[in-house]
Image 1 (tube, one colour):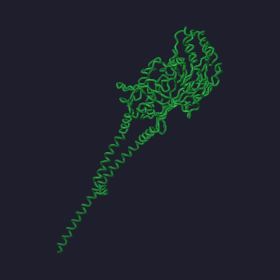
Image 2 (tube, one colour; image 1 turned 90 degrees about the horizontal axis):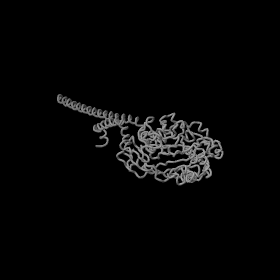
Image 3 (cartoon, helix red, strand yellow; image 1 turned 45 degrees about the vertical axis):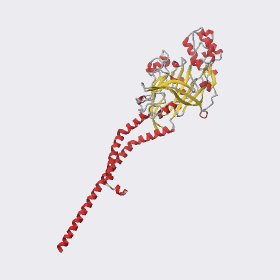
Length: 515
């Protein structure tokens, strides 16, 4: 049978009807619930921490570039500041580092559906992206000296002891400010030998057993001391195998399911992820996004902002929330390190003293963005900009994948004009900014392409399902019409042949009669 005959055959037309009916049935199932079920099933299957899987490998080493940017507030009037002038700062940087992530020492916990592991980060300076060099000299607020002044006042209120302490440190060269290399300040360490010698002084030893924090005992201080290329904290994370809603969610940090820094369990809770993994099926405006940030000693609930598009991908944008006071949000009372909650009454800035050995380190958004204006008036040179300084995370709602993120925070310290300490007596009270840090990451091009194609297809699917349904129904209609026409044509031919036979009989009869 040639192709033309096949296409004109009734069996072929019946096959068209059959395929059209089956196609319509499948389209109805997939178009009104089936596609959503299929996609969700595939997402659940892929987003699980199973050794050797694509998700596991991407989580273990984080192949996308993650940048850490340091911006330092250089004090331009240090001597005048010591004599009571308003601190004047100018921003240096950014000093940009790329972070090489890795995870080690995996221990599975099948009973809890978790993995325990250690992480490590190695920082590499990126000069072509930086505005400055690692050996730049910067003048900044002397964090250790100012911190010691606060701790001393918590320890005693005897003016003679406080004055003696200040004098002994001043004789060793300590001032309200110091000047060091950028790299020393961040990684290699600046000398704090003065404080070790102070604690070894017989007069100080008579006051009691006073120990330096363990990190300071080698006479060096740096923001990221001991954290470059070394094994760091222990983490425990859900794999998401049993429950996709738990995917990437933290169970413990440093082998503890709760922190011990704050005054109540609600503030010590470890909620959310470490920022690298999120559960799928984010519901904009409904789903909570918590990220545990060890440097802040707390989990931060990010605030849903709006739907937007990033790199051609529809995303839900979450913003770093406002930093409220206990008066504005009573649930935050346990983050205040003071018994008097009135000492934690400045909107936009919060104390980290509870997790930094009592040193009154404060955190806020960069350049005191969204902080009470009285704080910004204490400093010359800060210029908050929402677009530049407001942190955000863009998440693809279906998969929970972070498409791009910019996490920012500023560290400051409160300078107090202590009357009993000569080095501080003339200073103006102020929150002096020290540095602000930005961590940035963007999803790699391949995964962005795959998510973009998926999003495009799912966006067109409501139209495609109708198009496909009409096409299948059209196939049924055309097939039925062809079968009908084919059968009608066959009947016409049969009738004509019968009429021809009857005509032949009549003709023969007429001939016989004539004869």
